[in-house]
Length: 69
Image (cartoon, rainbow, N blue to C red; front, side, top):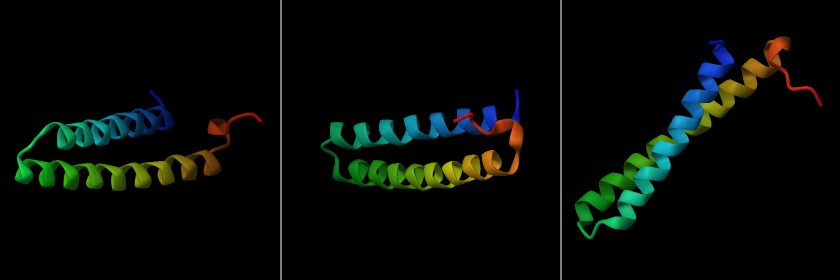
């Protein structure tokens, strides 16, 4: 598996994780759990942004990963 594929797989998984944490926060009435899940969701969203930046960097630096327009 190429580097870009691994990065994109990690990105997709992290987006899914952030979404799950948001759902958990909405599904609970426990305020401590809600706060924890919201914090975890925000952390995952921060990771998504970092991974998106890395994917773009790799695509720009490595010609074999550039998408044809």
